[in-house]
Image 1 (tube, rainbow, N blue to C red):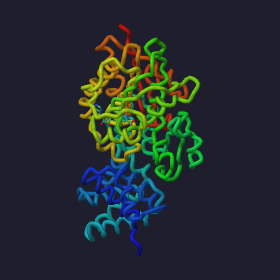
Image 2 (cartoon, protein in one colour):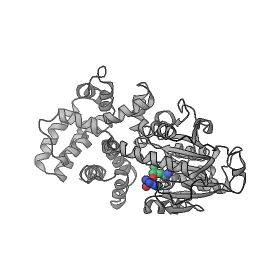
Image 3 (cartoon, rainbow, N blue to C red):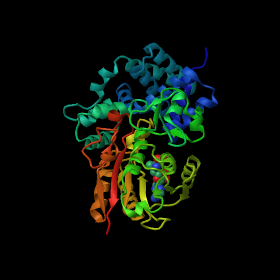
Length: 456
Ligand SMILES: C[S@@+](CC[C@H](N)C(=O)[O-])C[C@H]1O[C@@H](n2cnc3c(N)ncnc32)[C@H](O)[C@@H]1O
């Protein structure tokens, strides 16, 4: 019988994530390439690995109900993989059970295979709709706990999303959007590529960003414009927050004199810097857009991430520097992008295991760093200049609270209505900040606040 390469690959990825904190989105492509797994088998391995990792919380609750002793970690990983096939994929039960038992026999041994067989049969006795009321807290008395198990998210993340959304109504939609594979979105960097060029390579125009194109199938790395950094993979909200910064008018004498100076303070790996570099050089390409002729300095505290920025930009100056101990003179920049280090809770759909790894205790420390960086960004910008504070997280403690605290502490900045610079998108919230959402916009949950430094 031929070896079930797709399931073996998925199992090996799940084991590596569990055992040594590997990143599935880095490891899986390597395993597929090294083992020559392509086409439908590669697609199956991806769905098995990513789907299982996303659903861990739900599957573990069900496995616990179906066992009288805790399984060894390798057996538990196989049971999780089997549970995903039984409960969320259209794999016939006999095939899901049989292939998982074979996998346990191959990778662990014959004794555990018998045990796995018994547990999987119990799991297969109910559908996911029947299991959830059994293993999840009651929805009426503990709605957050219920959603956490039903939609496979840690409870603290569901709570944080509920706070950021301001209620329960949209929560199931948001959690479902996190569980779906995101579209691959490309950016055609203006002056260097065009949406038309990406369309010719098989993509379709994006919904919001004038530079976006969706790639429904195929490897983006094979597209010529992507291979030579004229285009790139970039979430549409990421494109829009960078564009928004360049749209804020600086209608005063300082801006008119000579070209503008821009700073991207936390630039690695260079998604936003790549777009800002192209707009700085060639202009935004639209009637109201920035006309070009600016100079971008891109910095990151980590050398290897600064290197990635250097590889993806053309004209920008790129340095390794700590934004909290600036390597630049204060008050010299017209526009500053601060895409702050954050929990990344807005991009959970991209990294299947990330939700189970994030630790709420990191928020306090990140919050201190975010406040210091935002203070430093305001120091770096000249009076009349603007700062974009961006996070790929909707968590209030990383977004509104940080901006509110920094504004309250210093009297030299005011918040603009960021939504005014994002006319393409609605549903961005009550302002003055803008909050994108996966379930509303099909983008990451990106947050943008725009601050203007007051004149003395
Ligand atoms: C959210 S990522 C930026 C993503 C990037 N703007 C993009 O679009 O590709 C945050 C970055 O901040 C960097 N960073 C963290 N602390 C920093 C500091 N004190 N100064 C400068 N960069 C820092 C991290 O190395 C990381 O690359």
